Length: 92
Image (cartoon, rainbow, N blue to C red):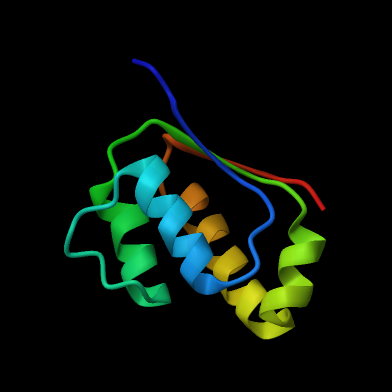
């Protein structure tokens, strides 16, 4: 089965993150564009296998703020840990 790759880079806002993930992973139309909805979709609705590659995360952390960035990263790490068909590759 082919692996869907979602490559994020130069993410400077949550809306940009949601837009890119929606486009690349084909999130469902009912995606609520908030962190809880992001977790729900990534954990339960996006068919696997898929790989999340996030580049320039230091730039994103600065733009989003440390708390929001940590919350997003926690969601991605949790989804990767819970699902056996999701991999996460973070590049600062």
